[in-house]
Image (tube, rainbow, N blue to C red; front, side):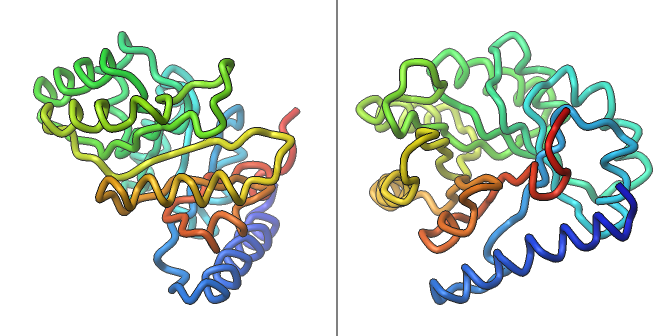
Length: 222
């Protein structure tokens, strides 16, 4: 991908976000675009950085460790978000590398992240991932357990940014996004990490503050 290609794709996605925000009576800058760069190497990422994108998302700690330190050294104002599942034993590494973690979903991870943050004296913002479609194969806190998990996270002094979800694949996402927005309101949280390449415009109209876009920016993965 050339810088021109990256600029075009980035412009198209930003324009779609702005249009969806305007439809909902929101300001476009109330939505953070996270460019999900999982399975893309530095050579694929650099054109987007050159085009002006500064917020990126990765699914795995190990993959991010292999490519981002050098990229961040070259462009220090990059913000990194972990958007995939996090194992408790990787909490130290995640806290060291990421500025935000979108997959807090269980009490053991609350404890691991609190310990890692205290040790590193670094406090990435945390989104609690909700299993919004009650799908057994997906990560995320069951809706019924959300109040307890939020209570534990607050007692552990984790910096809570909001809620995150991945709706069921084959179903209309709007009701799930609306439900996540209601849960966030009910629990006094402002951040909503929801919406990917196929549905980010719908997510923005329903209140998304962070959209996680990969394919629309990078093209299909091999």
